[in-house]
Image 1: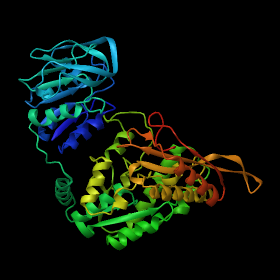
Image 2 (image 1 turned 90 degrees about the vertical axis):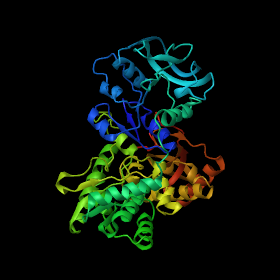
Image 3 (image 1 turned 60 degrees about the vertical axis):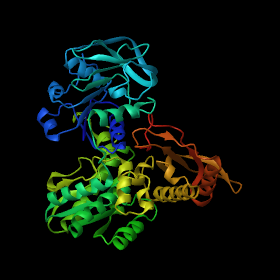
Image 4 (image 1 turned 30 degrees about the horizontal axis):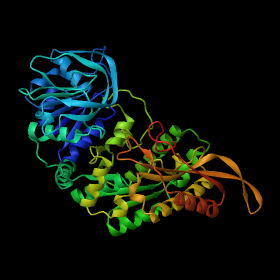
Length: 509
């Protein structure tokens, strides 16, 4: 087990992914984690992430300096290295020349973190501070033309620091550096697999639930579906799933969920049809954050009503993932800019008085898919693209009405059909249609039209933290456009979104 202490780096999740790619479990915690809690976790190693702060500024985040005396190997990355230097009596100063992007790294000692790595290699820098004085016992292990201390180590105490980011693909030997830290330095074993996760998760769920009953909101997406099957394996008929049809789902979504879970998997699934209730509450609402909050509130109300019909429920299960948590709150547990709210993160009303179970909350999407495969779920479900909790309501820019909803459902279904037929569905992170709040002039059958515009969105990504717009073949875009305009009444123009995240988000709202 590796403990990652997050100082606010944009790459913190990427560090975790790189560790898990080596089949080693890791856990991200804020720098406020107490020393006693670190001892209880018994990590084989600790990684200190980068961050946007300068260590010499007031209120800069710092971990308990006692962690460096625990005898546990520590790897500091960028700000993490600077915090280690500062805590151990060295000096961090503002760099004379900031360094961002590629830099040629000159390795001076091909041992420890750099074992087996060539004398020169490419690294990815992103820093405005530098090491002015080394702490006692440390030595320089790598430099760049601009950074005299690009890496350092105290091999006796097994403390290592990298000014660059080994977790990004731009650092050519970054994967090897992390591997060197995990195995020769920390002595980790490759025991983190989905089989081991299932075994441990089943034991934990059974121990926590006992003979109690669990209720889960099933959406039909990958996350809630995998969570449901994992829970069923652990507690069987003690689990009841509730599928809330909010009226803003994709075409024929409810029927597909019923066919898979209630019939084929023989799970106890209750279906609540509440489309009219949701649409009524959304009438006249155009602000996307208000839409999300309304849908989250109504979902909870409908879910709560269904829960009351099931006797003896003590637990609420959710398919929350790491990215859900990261986008909804600061990694420090403090205030941060809310990009969009997730109604499955922190949305549990106190009056429901259920204990929360989130068996997937430390997993990434790709790991959830591997878990689903191990649990025997069909590929069509495992590889289903992410779908927002508020559904098509946040893909209808502007007011959500039954008429606009019908248009978008049909357009989106045609897009999905063509993307699958082209063999691109699994290569895309998401592909979907958006209904815009404007109309355009067109000509159909020698007559003037003034109708709706559909925007198509397709992106590639590993984890949704960043995403690039997909370069779909022109003939595919042409087929989709022609079919939507010809088969969906009320649309006379189709456009394609070519923006990436950042600066845009994947969803339009």
